[in-house]
Image (tube, rainbow, N blue to C red; front, side, top):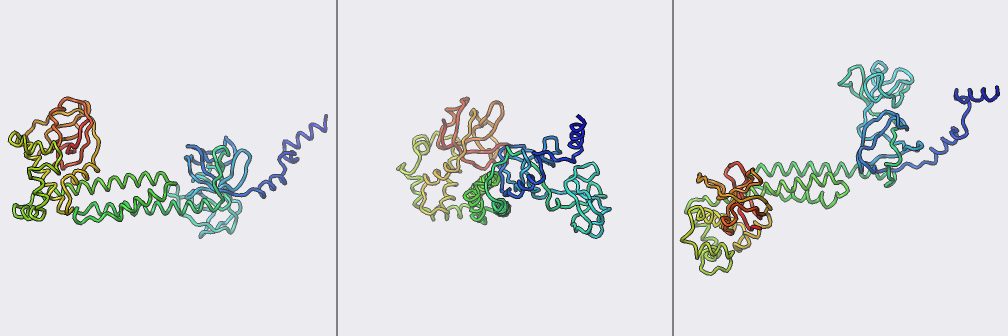
Amino acid sequence: MITSLFLAYLLAAGTVATPTTTAAETKKTQETFKPFTGKVTANKVRIRVKPDLESHILRQIDKNELLLVVSDAGDFYGIEPTKNTKAYVFRSYILDGVVEANRVNVRLEPHPDAPIIGQLQVGDRVEGQVCSMNHKWLQIDAPKGTRFFVSKEFIEPVGGPEYLLTMQKRKTQVEDLLNSAYLMSEAECKKSYPEMNAQQALEAFQHILRNFADFPEACTQAKEGLALLKETILNKKIEHLEAKAELSNDAKNELIAKHKAEKQELFSDAPVQLNPNLWQKRTQKKTEMTEPMRMWDTIEESLYLSWSAFHIGKKIDDFYAEQKANASVLSGTIEPYEHMVKDRPGDFILRVGDVPVAYLYSTHIDLEKYIGKEVTVQATPRPNHHFAFPAYFVLSVE
């Protein structure tokens, strides 16, 4: 009885090792463990300071993040600190970058109750900066050998230790490419349309989409940047073409003469190149056209003539084919826009519920037939002359 109680006391005091947790077995496990790159398989996975569920949580990480796994700790993996993990040491123990005492605690936060993540010894050299939150502490990188812990169930091996380094380099590369593409786009978007040369920026975004699919967040940003750049180019092009359409009579006649063949087809009696609806408006119902209809007809002809100056040999169908390729799909109810103001951007308004969302006009479609109806239109942008909503030329209605 006495022997049993004495043995129990020794076990509780830690002076006798239990047969399942010997130091030799622990050392053997660590010696045979091969580090690897692990991928996180869920969102909001917790990194802890120690390998137990009651331990302090360092931070949470999301799905697909990569970690360097360097040890086995039961139900947890030991990992190296992630990039830019900071630690803190009391400044009184540091003189000219050298530790002046033994077993100086390195803590997770700049206060004495923060979790300890390592220790420094006398003579160790440290580099850091005075903590902005508490000037009594020095902010440093986590010491070599620091380990944090993640539950094994959320880690999937994806390669050796070198894989993490490769992916970190690729991440830096795609971030640099993305920043460069946005900077080039910003510079080009500040230029006028004739001065723009956005091909390099467009190719940079497309290069990211083709070659960095393993970085979905960067690809999403590249898609957004590419769409924004294309939209800006299109809007500047429309503004430029509209400005060209407002040339003096002599300059406009010179432009028309340069493209005499296209002009003849545009106004000839043979409706070969024209949309049937547009041709019908220009021939059978020419005398019935209202002043607003004539205005839009003139604007569209001017846009085409200006466009043809940069597209030698192209017909009006080619012009609208390009417009269709850049078209947007809008849905809502069509209502007439009855305010006969100068430079109005359309004859109709598209509403979603009670909210107006766009001005509309068309020389292809008789939009009066759709007043009060819920429709889906395919439309291409037009200048809105600084009115409240964007303006569109309607190509088709469903």
